[in-house]
Length: 214
Image (cartoon, rainbow, N blue to C red; front, side, top):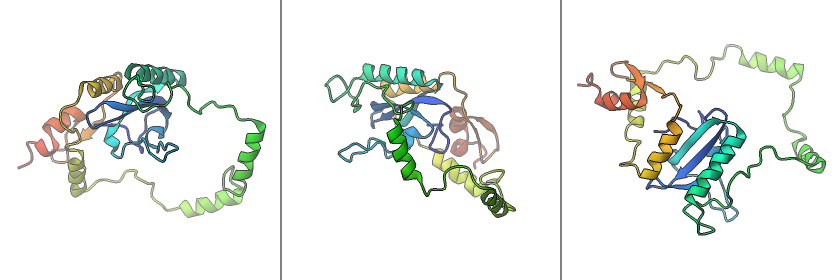
């Protein structure tokens, strides 16, 4: 099961893979923040991003940018590209060619400035800060300290059940192994007995399989 999502992306630069139904990768990329979950639209209108986020795998994270580039290039070289008849990936380059660190010319900066005029970007004025403070007073913090009802916990339990789709291929097991190295496993709490533990053990012995369920 994927620990990382668009709402909970990895920390730092990372290398990711998009998988087919058989678990083999069809695209390798390098990203930061929510890059892996954004649309990858080609000039012909096709979108490389999987419809199901379960097919997005974070291979490695907490990397320096050059490390993410190196791993991206390594995996593209190992799996090969379809466009040059060397392998199975739909990548059109050998990797390491992202836009971060791109040098922008003065002319490009001027065009960007012209496009941004009239937006609300940039530092807020004292008046804007004061108005925002008044609007925020008395509002509860979003998604913080809100206890889940038993019915909600049960829905969460059901949504987490059955995410693994049958036996995994060797390629997907290898990618999963790389992505799990050095990573702490997320903790889940069983809604039936309130016991907490790692994802693997909890999904195996709790939730719908919990002994407290009659």
